[in-house]
Image (tube, rainbow, N blue to C red; front, side):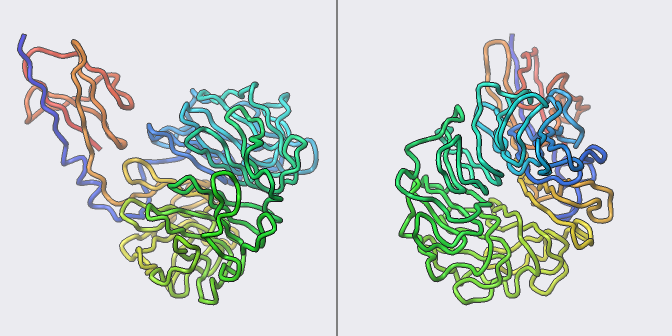
Length: 447
């Protein structure tokens, strides 16, 4: 039997994306109708499905998994989710994905799925079911989580103990939820709340919050730690840091650090809620955002092209109207090609709390808002990013071929390059195993 397999790209599928402005609302992504009050945190799976956490009303912290079109994924358990025994309003503040698909949650809750005691931390399996073997306990709210390549989990928050061990606002867990006793063995930790955690490419740990000292060493609202939890003295913000809270951190590939928060100045220079630091902690003067943002920056993301997304409570950036989201060029100027139109609402309490990037370049945002670009969107929206060319790869495997691709595209096949092309049955999310047919077969991706 002779056969030919030709892999193609459907340009027509990409032209629709090219014709739309980065930052504009993706109208093909319609999140489920009002299911929560505020969404606090996001994570994007490799298949494009989205995990989102927050709260519903004053009695329930919630987590959902959404399909790529915004519908709730019924394969992920919704359960009774997070609750509190006291008057604290339960909320899921942070979530992170393990490489095995498990989901680590941090927040303000004491119970999960009604009957299981889980003090501010929990882990779900890939189906959304509570992992009963994972049972850590923080003394107060967990606000940020990050998972290291070795599976260990950094948590930051507003706590003073972890499972009875004195840990101030920062701790590291082993993958099973037990305390990592090798982390910061001698130090007292940050002396105030930690609200942001990010990992450097070299194994260092960046933290931001309300603190002005870490392990008794002066550090103004942001610090870098070595992998063992000690303060990195090569990243020195003892006198040159921001003058207010740091609530978001993003690390660039060149190790420079973007910070966002509630500050007005960094190292004496005006930096409205966003700034970039050099690898040694000094202010990077080549990132000069003029007046910056006129209110809080809660979320940051660095795109592959070096542009920087910021979300928060602001309405004005560098003298231009930008409602809750903006994009900066690498030099700190406002990117005028990124146009979110009316943005995430005009209310004084409207805000974007989380930003995540999809593999195909789209941008997912979550927070507290009911409209985006004057379209109904309750706490969540997906925006168009810069066009990303679809990539389709193929491998031979016995009597089958395995096709893999990135992005939210539909796999189609035809016996002739001119078509007609039909959707490949049961292709679903990549990779797709497809039987080899006699003759010639053409494949393409369609947006």
